[in-house]
Structures are given as C-alpha cells and as structure tokens.
Image (cartoon, rainbow, N blue to C red; front, side, top):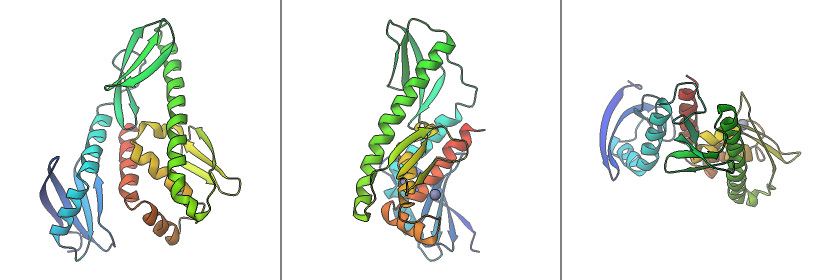
Length: 243
Ligand SMILES: [Zn+2]
C-alpha cells in the first residue's frame, strides 16, 4: 500500500506536467526527474494529492529545466571528436562546436554554440583551445559561486576557502576546514548551475558538520531546502553521460 504509484497531471504556466506520485515514510516532498524524463514525486504518507500538485506547480521551472538538460545529454552518447558539430556540455546545455578560421586562438559560448576561432583546425589544436576555455570558465564560474554561497555561511564564522579545481574520478568535491581548502571537480562545469551550487553548499556544510550525520543533512536542508532535487539532477545528468 505504501508504495502504490498514482499518475497525476497538472497544468503549469510552462505547460502540462505528468508525474508519478509515490507515498513513503518521509518528512518532505521530493521531486526527481528520471533518466527517461519521467517525473517522480515522493510524498509523506498523509499529504493530499492537491498539496503535491501545488508543490509540482511551484517547481515547474526546475522540472522543465531538468527535462531539457537530460534530453540534451541523451543526444550526446557518442565519443567526442573535435570537429564541426560535436557537442560540448556547459552548465547543463549541449553546445555545438563551430570552427571559425580566425587569427587569434580563442573560444566563446553563445546561442547554443561553442565557437572556436583558430587558424589551425587540427583536432588536437581545437581540443587544446576547448580545454583551455573549460579551465578558464571553471575558474570564473566556480570562484564566483563560492563567494556568493559563502555569504550564507558568514553567520557561522566560516572563512572564504582557498579553491582548487581539478578533474576527480570519484567525487564532486572535497574540503579540509582545518586548512581552509576546498576542491571542486572540474567536470561539474558540464552540469547545470543549480547542481554546481549544491556541491559547493555541501562542502561548506562540512565546515559545520564533518560527517554525513543527521545534523549535517538538517543543516543543509536549512541552507538549501531543495538540495535533494539538485543532487538527483546532478546524478541523473552524469549517469546519462557515462552510459
Ligand atoms: Zn560530504
């Protein structure tokens, strides 16, 4: 009985959303956009469906964004080549590579494209320009997000940490509050901004609670009430990319 699934449909300002509602022994309502783009909602046992409808409507922007980025990630399962038309992920969006014969080497993102200007269009050279571009964007975007998010932690006497950005295989981020250092996985730049923010908040929360204790999660809930949706979105995003 507890795990009965109910199909609901709601009208939102952005369009119709169908979702699968499941009741569980939990405290809050959670939304998850699955890899097949279906929307799953878990709700505490006695919450009326009207309430979950309302919740879904209030999160419609998040849901449509998640569906869009999952769908575009699904389109890109082929091996990356550094030629015209290849897709590169940036902040949850798939950018199509355009090679433009120009004199100074540089790359720029805009209107769904990643335009690389270069006189040398060999794949190796294009790859280098794109990697440099990713590295610069990571630095710019991650550092800005860290200093924004840090503001929420000033009341808890958390200092602004020293940031290291590098590719990591098994984690999104890590931190050492004693050394005041935070490391972020450069791969995160491919995922939506809301996911990057979630990882940074998670690491900052470790300044207050070292382990993933109950206190850690309730503190995170207070700082970022929709952290679970963001975490799910991050996992779904990369699950597809790793297929
Ligand atoms: Zn952690």
